[in-house]
Structures are given as structure tokens and as C-alpha cells.
View (cartoon, rainbow, N blue to C red):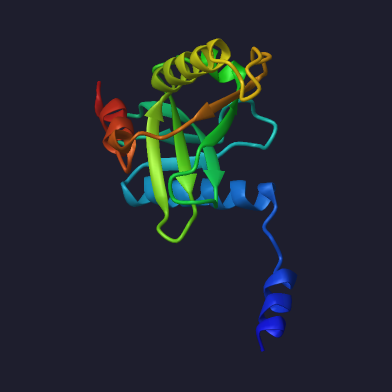
Length: 162
């Protein structure tokens, strides 16, 4: 019986990164629409923006970049080095974890840029496991802080301001 269970588990289809990303974007869209906002997904070749969101009363808009994982509950998210330069007031990142308990981390782009820049500099200055200097890379790691968990008010407050 155990062997049969292992075979069944082995044959389960793993979701592709594209499927995981789309699921995250749709999850964010549902959250925004439930809060009374107008939300629309951009075309896949739109750089740095997955969702455009607007308040129907103020007609103020913001851009949202969604990063999604289906990993462990407190997963890290991999970003590109170009995210260090994204510091626009109107740009927010929403990090989505599709694990058992779906979680959202809403983070202003300025905060993401600052956090990943500091973490990368610290990583570069620390020796590797072998004691050698780390080689620079375009990958940046973002670990969501609990203060951003389900903090949709950051987007709401931005869109409600006149």
C-alpha cells in the first residue's frame, strides 16, 4: 500500500511557474475587487506591472507587481537586481504564498528596494561557506516582514488620498 501511495504522489503534476504566477495575480485581483477597487491585469509583456488598480471615487491609480510562490509558509521570494531601482510611490509589490494558508504581503516599492539592497550588500560582504568572497549576482532575495502581512491598507490609503 505504501508503495502505491508513493507512486501516486510521484505522478502528481507539479504546477509550472507560469501557472503559479497566474494564480497569484488572480488572487490579488479578487482581493482588490472585494475592497471596491477597479483592477485589471496587464498584458504579459508589460514590464514591472502585473495589475493596474484604481479607486472609482478618487480615480487615483497604482501599479502592482505580483510575486507568487506555493512553497513553505515563510518562503523567500527571488527578485531581479532591477527591483532595487523601483522606488515609485505608485508602485506596490504584493507577495503571495499559495501554501495551505494563503498569505499576502503588500509592500511599497521603496521598501522593497531598500530591503533587498541592504540584504544584498550584507550578503556580498560576508564570506561564503568555503570562506571565499561571494560573487555578485543579479538575484535578490526578499523575505516578507510580518508588518506587511495582509496590509491592504497601504494600497487603500494611497488610493484614497486626494
